[in-house]
Length: 389
Image 1 (cartoon, rainbow, N blue to C red):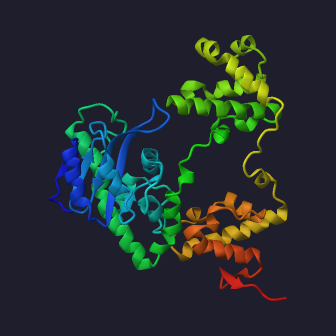
Image 2: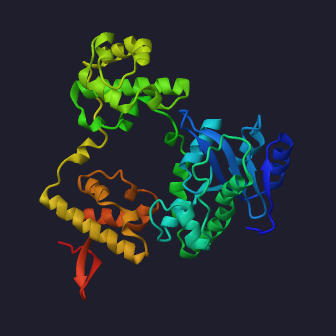
């Protein structure tokens, strides 16, 4: 990034419009956000950091009535949005406009194709690529408090200042290796609305301990979790503030038939029982005789036979060969759990999508189809064309 670029703090409509005019012609912009969600269901945007090679700014959404000019640029399909571990930032933009911006370049995902570990943190990637150790003092700061100090603003700005150079280095190296286009499907997926839509009927999957329930208790838990999620959304409060997970499990296990019985359970405060007890008992009564939703991928939990286990071992060997060939950690290509799914006939796994499919997924499928084999030559394991019968 240009060393002469000055950090701007933008808290007026006029300054925002001037900044947007300045970066409107950019091919790409580096983005990051600071937010809080400890007291809300939805993330509360507290600061938005933006950089190009020539300019860097911290935009204060708490001081601005309208972020429209900036959001217009973020949602401009002609501008690539560069982020690190983009999911949470994209969720914020989704809730601001009901859609996710595109196109996106996620440096955490891109780093995988250069041999870096899965889910590498921004600070570690900056240190590895640029030799810079970032300050961590304000990692847990309350970004909703004002005024923000100069050290806080610099800390926040660093998240995009160095992202500029990280992006340029990753892009150049991936282009040189011919791997840049491999990322297209992964990046497109980040802009899919399905990633950010809320599905209350699936909220039970996030309840700790749900895997220990079955039958009527599981059906009740699923209905209670849906009720809690909808209540949390309406009130914009954390779901745990409505009802804790352990309380949900307790209700599901005992399935109380009256408010009095509900009040005797552990983990429920009197105010909740008084205010919502009748509603909770009604949810229990309606769900107790219903059939519970099955756990996702329940079929994949089948115990593998010895021959299927051996097949997984063979696939794992192929994955390791591919990792060595492309100088990638085989763990980022496919896990044993994914390969077990393939052995059971379930091809809906990460290794069969995007760049992983190009690197090893197609070979795995060929192995399963009997078109590829493994052999030992000169003491080394190699991939061979399967012998025809």
